[in-house]
Image (cartoon, rainbow, N blue to C red):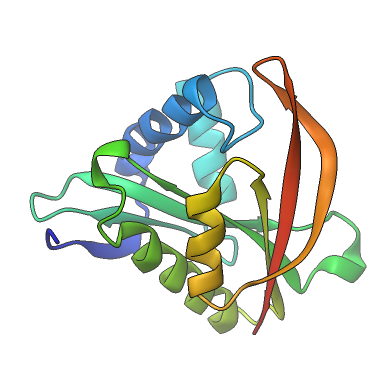
Length: 165
């Protein structure tokens, strides 16, 4: 395994995060976004993912961003304020090397430090590696939403996984 480290995302990481994310928009069902994120939208996203709703990046020995993870509000109503949703994306060239586990462990630790009580993961049915990653990091499958998304001309299920902190 190449040496990787994880740190809070910096504004200069925006383009690398956008590149990783937009590949998933165009080629996979890891996100239900259908239109690649613009640079301006990425800047807005970076501002939204500071503070308690953090974003972390994994970097290789050369300092290149090879993945990211973030926290987002789970729902907008105030009663859900102690629950967050995680997202984890790893560049295709660095998958299977432990990067996802480093990112998820760090973002869960940040959620706990920030005082959140539960972390939710919503994973499309085709993302078996993401389900396995979350299971390995203490998440439990609590349900499946049937055919709630549509991408690439097909209906997609979403697995709902949860970890209490």
